[in-house]
Amino acid sequence: MAGKVYLVGAGPGDPELLTLKALRVLKAADVVLHDDLVGPEILSLVPPTAQLHNVGKRCGRKSATQAEINTLLVNYGLLDLQVVRLKGGDPLIFGRGGEEIEALRNANVEVEVIPGVTAALGAAATAQIPLTHRRFSSSLIFITNHHSNSASTSDWPGSISPTATVVVYMPGYAYAATARQLVAAGLKASTPCAIISQATRSEERVYITTIEELRSAPRLPAPTLLIVGEVVRLAEHPSLHDQVSAREEFLPLVAQVESFAQSEGIAEVSERPE
Ligand code: SAH
Image (cartoon, rainbow, N blue to C red):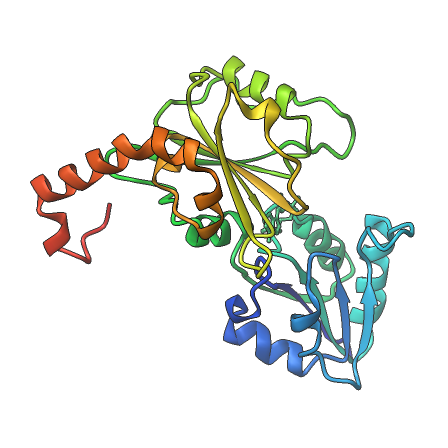
């Protein structure tokens, strides 16, 4: 009898962001193949009887290729085993989940996807950045700076609305080039940006700047995420208290939001959507 493969999102780091469904499936796993982004607290939930494979990229050794991972998944899936493919964040956002589903379908192996909290949502939550805001942001773009086949960033949208929030996954440290792409897509150089490092983990740090100052931003420890858009002015995080200049510059917008909320009576209607 064939088994089943679960593509499971482990969330951005904080183990409490794992879903109950992910936890249930993980606890009953026979085999777990995980990425480097999945931290030790979550891996400690895997039963000791399960086989644990790190198919990630770091630890100073060569990672498994996507084709090798697909083959492992299919081979385990064809046995009578409960297989968990555990990925950071959500398995279907910049996680190659689509390629794994395709390989499993082609081999007639049953597959189920269990979503996870993607890094953008975890980072926005802890930095208190509303990714959409009735007044400042009406759309949300998830983009990656990393391309598997080339170093080109030509897949960036040709134009980005100033009322969009842009979240750049795998932003790397070529900040000057990223800033050029953002400006080429039509954003003002003064648009605020937040670099969020190790979101939802105890080491999390947030650095706020603007597109034009991005090139002099510090290289915070990976994984990092870049959030760009007017809503970044609303960020609040303990690590920002070391960055007095940025906070002072952005304070007027916070005041504007508060007066807008008062004029709309938002404080009294807490469950109204944006
Ligand atoms: N499937 C994942 C994304 C995988 S791509 C998800 O849904 O979140 C890997 C990239 O995700 C990293 O380079 C980084 O940009 C981002 N990322 C993942 N976890 C993160 C974290 N805890 N803090 C900041 N960025 C994170």
